[in-house]
Length: 552
Image (cartoon, rainbow, N blue to C red):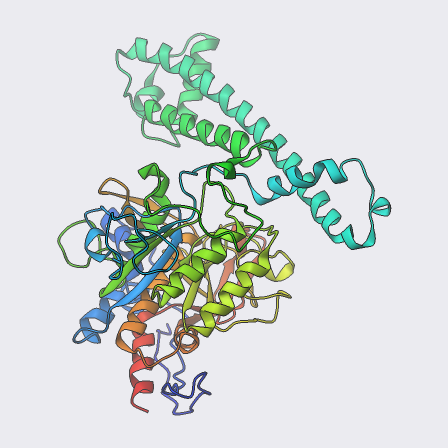
């Protein structure tokens, strides 16, 4: 059986993207041909830190974080600010409060813009959403905006200058109507399931004298009538999803609540959520809005951003919770992502805010497939590139090949092929088992549009209220990479954002094993074909390359 191996170092020098920074040594990365597959399930403790594991020593496709700290990281690097553009961050969390960025030029609570950056009392970042939590999808906003103008018309009736806009409107309208109808049907089915389960649960609870019965106890029940047989069959099936029926009822209730929220908010064609801010969302120059509450109006709305922040920088080795990827990092919270689709204006201004206030890495774990003003975000990305700031972006969770024409925003490609900036890393999600399911079933992929893969399934991290939780998505994979990037920028500040991107892409672990792309067992591809680098990010290799290159 072949084992993982480290290829010989090459002294070929790559072109440096900046004359004032050190050139990079080209180190061919490790390649995995065959490894003994880890067939046993991971324990909860193993799951909690699997992204830190080493693929060779543990046969778990982590990033070799522990190995890097144990063998390579010496001394203390320079402090690096990482901006988390997201739903908000619980800056009071026990595992985050010590790593939260504080604006040194702002006097807290005096109601004055001390640093003259346009944002009053922005002590730990800025909230571009104010008290907004819910929002529409971008496609719903498009339908709402143009329905009166285009409804009932054909393409032939539309002036040439508006034909592309009409096509976008038509596509958005079809999707909104189809998805809304499907969601209504699904909600109705779930309501019927819940009613049937509750009825069966009441009958069986009375028969057994308790509510928290097991699947084995249900199986042992004598069922002589049609109703008893029906109740037994329903509960047996539902106990495949949760350990107890009360837990199942809670889970279905949460699902129904989520569906109702999506119907009432995401697909709402009459909403005006933006009115609460008082700005003009179609005017990029209208920047005086939002507030300094970077958690948001409801701590629970900061769930996603808090989880992302913990992955990057939860305090290491403090004896509580978890270890983030990076130490010596300050988290800047920039709230711009609601429960719905983000606004292009908010994202563009959030990126510029992060850049202007010292962030060297920006994490963007969000995305959408429609954008009304993508040029604002493109300009902000270019601005970040000019200021030497790296952006780490989640590729999306639809399980699709982004090279086939689906454009996800934000991105760094105007034509789905050619990059207009060299400072953006797009990240796909890895599963924790090395083998045919290595690529997460939900992860987007693409040889042109996705750069690397990183751990994104069952990721343990911080959530509001001093709690911790498993979440998954490319939203979790991106901050894993952002943490590695922050550490590289901390210990090797001579390298530019573009060079850090190249180090990360070049030093990942390669494999040509066949995997199911998009979770489709019929869509089998070589893992190396799913991203531009074809690799899994590896912190140990990245530090090796950075160290050798810094001495060149």
